[in-house]
Image (cartoon, rainbow, N blue to C red):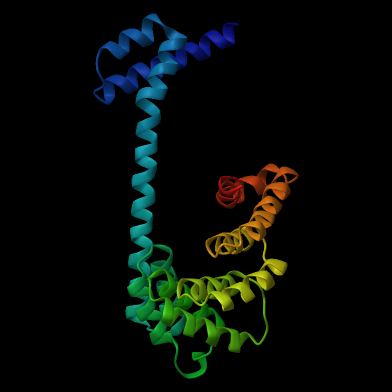
Length: 237
């Protein structure tokens, strides 16, 4: 008990100093002094924690700015494919697709003309920039480069491109093959949604039920990672 009491006093003193030093309302001092445990807890959650979160966000934002500045400097100093690709990936992750596309395109020359990593990057940038027709052409090129069907996110992207372009027969052919190899429920869910859209509701329901059944017997981490698709399946059934 003496130790706990001493710790409580330390927290009281710390929070009182914190309140005065940071110009908090004077009533906090009285709350912390006259209601030690509750006062400290309330002050922490209302005043200290938000400040810590704001500081963390500010530091994170500053760090990201420094990284972008560094990557741009590297490209300016040495416009190598490696440096341009690194900057393009940063733009892609930040949703700055036009800048990413420009850099990726500048990399597709010489020995890097058919570099799978670069073509993958430009496929993503062009698709999410809304140029589906062009994205499809890049995805076809990627398939030729890889020389095999992988059933991964890029094959799924190809099926999505076909669907968005109204090439439903091709999309209906692609999705089932992807499902066989795809990790997660996105491919199956997108296939089921397409079936439902085309009026094949019984077939769609089978796939939605498969997603729900799988989720029922899956560990929590899987349910969390696939929540978007599980929720969609539940809404359709």
